[in-house]
Image: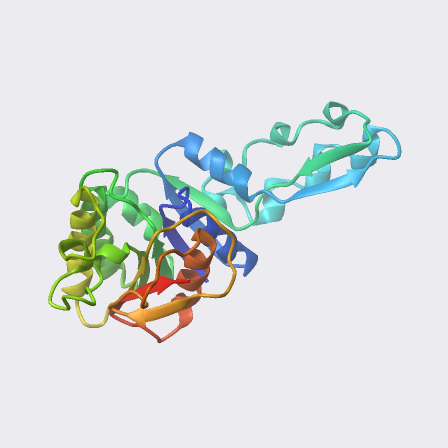
Length: 274
């Protein structure tokens, strides 16, 4: 499967990239700069620590990693810039001899489009040929999320991409104490500012008003500390699980990713908490 991941350098987004690559999927990440692409590539690169019993020649030269053609051609991964040149691996001499050395290999299946999720042209370039979209964009303190979602949904319609799973916030779930209100508008909120939740709501309304054939799901985590996937969490349609207080970035990413090929929670919000 070929996936477009938006917000790929964020805390949840990079875990979505990792999960998708581990499953052998091809990933296209729309990022804002070459620096962001390089940072994500570094985060995803597998590292193998090998005890060195001799000189650096034991690793061979850069050619030992194969040419770009061995990976299916540079174009498949966004051009030569996406791979970097052979020099990026360093020569054998640069490894030197040591008790333990780190060998970094290129990440297969990960390509980049540098652009803006609010740009129809950039999103079209990134989305062409994909099977589904994962979105973990944030608001950037303004209306970036809702502006981007409008473009994303328009391009999905044009390219006939039918599946999107997006990450929102628990603030746009229905309040338990006041079911007619969203949580961020109810007495349940602890927010001092509602600006981010308002933009999340705008993005949700765009999804909710989309054509019936669009299979969307909006995952709404509560307080989101950094942490690995534990596999222990609760989910609920359109509401936050009762007494839910937190959920790790790892569990949020794992649940979001596995929804891609699930028929559960289609065209609705889903709250998630430990």
